[in-house]
Length: 521
Image (cartoon, rainbow, N blue to C red; front, side, top):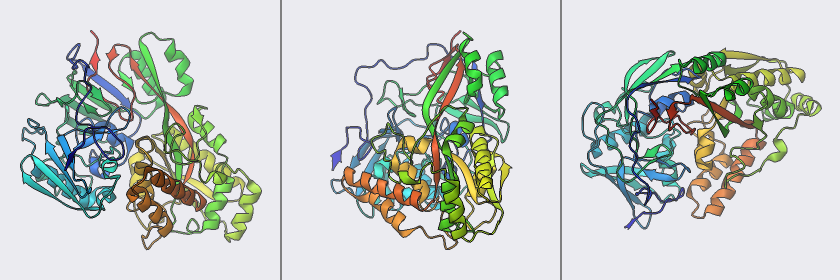
């Protein structure tokens, strides 16, 4: 057995913090933060939701065995150590002592096992555990994962916070999907939750910061709740978020529109915080029903799309063209399948429609108004499809409903679903492409089977021992997805957040972090 001491997003985990940093203490304590969140949330069940709106709130409540640091490298969170067998067939986690749930119950390995049991039953990305044979609890502070076969990317997958295996009390193991009682181990506990309105969190005074670190890093490290409460208020109208920020009714907002930036930057009471490569704007086809089960039709749509117009409308011009499913600054980025991107050729689209024998069937584009970039992208896509003779129309619901509809198999409620992939591309190719295989892929036909070539590339991404070979498998998988029009990535947008200037310690990240954040008196 060997102790893993070096951070690597591929096969190991950090178990110690910075060597010479000073441990964080709150410069000020107390006060209340109100955060203007742009999209509705109907559940805080982190295991069964991949929505940003759920993650924003739930990740301040729940914790995991492992998470990611500021640079998206795996680090330990509820575990104080992790030991991997030389053959990669077992991983032994030793839990941190002194950790308690928000109900006062001490954390033990029985709770970890129950959490893994629930995730394996209904977790949205339970394919993370496909290569896992089982787990054991040899004593109250030790949790052992046994593999079916060695998987060099297992730690990368396990540490993802896209849809993480959050640790819950054992007695919650049988809570049904989207019905999880909200009891975690994080620095904040849930005080009140009204779906569609707000979630109010309070400092958990029994929280035990991770002593292996000195500072917060990513969504782990040494975390301290400095404020009394954080209220996530659902404010879907961009103008209302800006007004709330200007008046001080909101101390921070998730998104401000490009048109408001100039005025906000002139306001000394407000700090503007841009974050590039926030998400990849994307549309996904439902291939279980006609005509989107027809490759020629899907390619006709691909040929009709002018992604510059789509992204310009989605973001008020605050975007970058981006081929595929990673951002250009990432080591795993590839432009494989580039010939399918931004074709914008109506004549070619009409020829493919004739090949598909399209007969003016109604095409439903599913979107929401909670996220204006998704709605605006769908609106332009609708017009571009109509321009080549496709009978397209929008179906507009709230964000949680659209996600639920997109995840129902064998349904005929929609043909294209609009979304934004941000956390997943930031976490890496593995976290992103997990969305394009079972149980998450929208493209599966009515027999619920993955495309065998796509699945083979996915398995190679997970299991090949060499990183270069895994990167090549990712390029193959991306090319297949794009050539077969199983997804339509449009480009990447820049998210602009903003805070009142007296809110200190808030740094933009994939998820709003309210530990190590304080209000300056």
